[in-house]
Length: 209
Image (cartoon, rainbow, N blue to C red; front, top):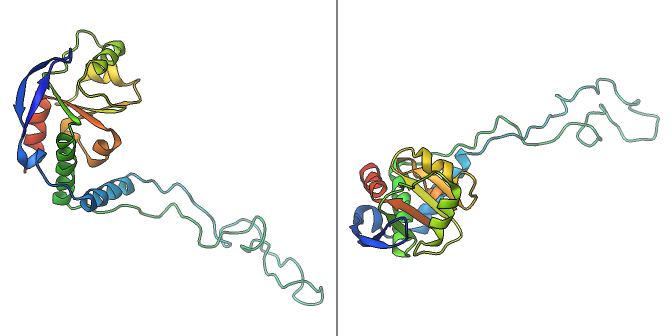
């Protein structure tokens, strides 16, 4: 697959061949959904925690005699049916949401997402990200001259790029990720992918296994 390459001024400078093994994979929504769900589960933290009637403080004394009062029988004021009592089958912080993802399946879903972006012209390849200054204003102006108009962007850099990180950290519509750390969640979180020539080579090298 061939794609056009642009410079930071939004002008076409040439073409680049994309590997069909990475950017030409047929999409399967079921596989992508399964990997996305597993990755979101693995990020989930079990914060909610409740106490049963045996863990709530107090309630050791029987509230009133078993018989003779005309009221219902109760053994503790910490019963789940009492206000301030324990919780029945409530959430616990010991719950484990971790979901196993097969390495091959995760990599396949990633390739499907990249292929979908390339097929739908939502993948923009640039010469590089060598901006003159690390200023957010320059990056905003750069987005305006791009051949693709979108509301959100995923920026893939080969390795850590402090300059680009500094320019994009205050832009909610832009997320910067190292190409070698790319995930399905990252690709699905933004509509358009911006990547340099070196970034494409890194992706093909890391995920073409």
